[in-house]
Image 1 (cartoon, rainbow, N blue to C red):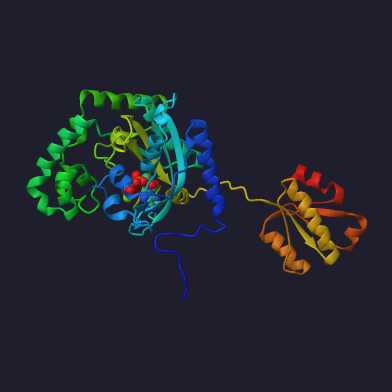
Image 2: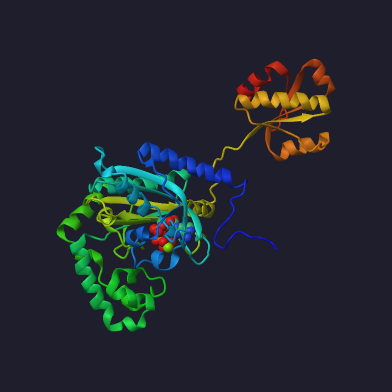
Length: 422
Ligand code: ATP
Ligand code: MG
């Protein structure tokens, strides 16, 4: 029996992890400069949290959750996204009482969704996301959007498109909802069974249907933007003004509705426009969720956030042929000839490592030539060969692999030499 990773999951192999670590470090650095402090919540939560927080009528809750019963008979779910957990923690730890609002959180970690596997769609994937809870200032909407854009620009992506929309407030949504029901009801029989169920429960979801998106009634459906209240329209205008001063280019798409129930006012997505990126082009999705904190049992505090997967970010880099500048240098490889030389190598390597110099040697008894080949394959910056004469002279030729230059350095000076030249 040959074991395989579960469908929709992947091993990230040692050759690939430096790339991941680079992205993760950029994410941490940008969270730091934008002041979004990391929160780490459990990988699983009470199922109800997601039913309530993500929404009963969403694809995530209806079809995609990994739900199980634990030995105590509780229904638990592997988290499919990070907002519900962040908001739960915000409420549970009474962060609404924090004198500094909004509370700005970031998270990074695996999410789980039972989805059909395809490029850019996994069953376990790593999301980075932020939440700013406790402010309904349009300036924070722009800040959140600019952080997301900054991330993609910092990794070097160029073919990006930011799409924004306003989903309005409750009054907007109610008026639009009635208009949608009237629009779709006469022909709802032509739509998929999901859409039929959505008609009364959450007609906005119909616009987000992946099966029926070609239906002519989709094109003529009443647009949310036509139902924006005065206050909502003004809010949206101010968000755009802030984006303008931040120098962020965007496209307004009145058909943008996000897949989760909790959004209102600002909604946005960032897509890759790189040719060859494939069918799934959305890199990041986010929006405002005033009302969610209250839904989850807290006070009436507004919030906004986004989430992006590292998997799709890496795919976008590939599509644009961008190689990240990863740091994985082997500073020195020590080749040893004979038992005594090997003892010396071990000692030297240890002295290198305590000074932060990355160093390696042979542990499978290879001949000189094979050891040199290893040093080459591992792309060591320097190589030294220790044999009898080196032991006698207590010094060694340090060879820089790229140039072939050699310099004789006493053992006692090696650490300093490497620190200077690595
Ligand atoms: P989609 O329309 O692609 O299914 P979604 O609306 O379900 O996206 P969100 O729940 O908003 O996506 O998640 C935010 C981001 O997380 C997406 O833009 C994408 O980068 C990433 N993401 C979502 N699902 C997956 C997945 N199955 N595999 C990899 N990344 C994912
Ligand atoms: Mg999805």
